Length: 257
Length: 257
Image (cartoon, rainbow over all chains, first blue to last red; front, side, top):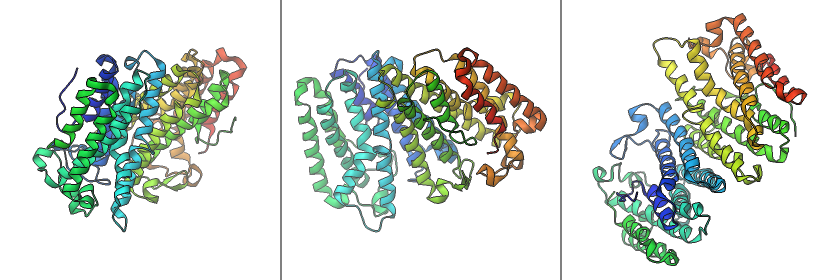
């Protein structure tokens, strides 16, 4: 069931499957929350691309849902994907333990909702009309919701399914999520739209503060490197078993898309 | 904890609390899924009122979210309310039984998603651009998703929380949900915007087929009456204990808003 991580795509599903493998959870069970988190991520992209949000025409190299169909369809597609994502994550086939299924559902909606991903999106929207640029702390808080919350949930799933301590995977994922976002900001500056599969240099053109604009390119890269080391160190108690997750962390800052 | 049903407002939360009382579930537990279903219903209204959907300016006598704020905020508010609704419904305080919490989460997202409420919304959108008007069967299917699915879920909650047979409450709610929608169509023709709290006669002006346009006003009222009798009969096994739910069914077709 292991699959190669291609660019930033399917990072969340990958983290679910790998953290589950680390805890001896069969792939036939882990595939449910893995598919679930990808559906939740997809919902956030469909809504985020709407004209009243980021107004993007291109996603993963294809027209966005509202461009291909219309805005109303994109709203409903996102709504349905959120419900589907939760359904998959707490599906009967995900675990024979009702306590695990209830925990997966509850932790996922908390990560996705008004104290997690949606909060990050709202802070991002507010930043666009704010009179001053965000500080580094504010961008870090914004990203910890916008992209961090789902990445952390995905990495924790294995421990949740095994009813084990989630702390090491949480620490790993918090550092990874921040590194991932810094890498995204670097790609936005250095990347090529065709290769990245979405519009680039939008942030700079919009005058938005990013990790790169605040830290400079070199310091941003140094920061991302340090976070990857921190992420890998958090998994030391797993020993060699966690090598794939460590490689994924290193890959996240080396990726081209 | 029992509260009076005012108009069509809070019908879903009311059904949760009453079906829970019927099964001896303490209100302190039932209030969680009751609040949850109201949050889900609110999310559907906020998104449904968007310019790219029904484009409504007025809801419950107040400006709609996108009118008061903006479209992007309304998208995020709806997204957050969906997550919140599920969080409340399967909250640790809702039940000491993990199996009940997992069941509440899973059944709720199934009712809300692409095979339930969102499907109904999508059929409704498709009907607006269709070349012919919907038939009675098609409108019935549309409404069974759009408004029926959440009403059925709400009414079943008591039996789900008691891990009892959901069949009688399901039959009650299926008839009630259809009666409710027919009553809504009647209100759209006979009602007053100030009293109803939202725009009326939109369907007739848009040339949309409704239960009233297809059946005529008198037959629509007869059909609603028969459905209320069917709903009450479905609860016969509960005896006098179900009187409040039966009264609610009768009230649904007598309401003015």
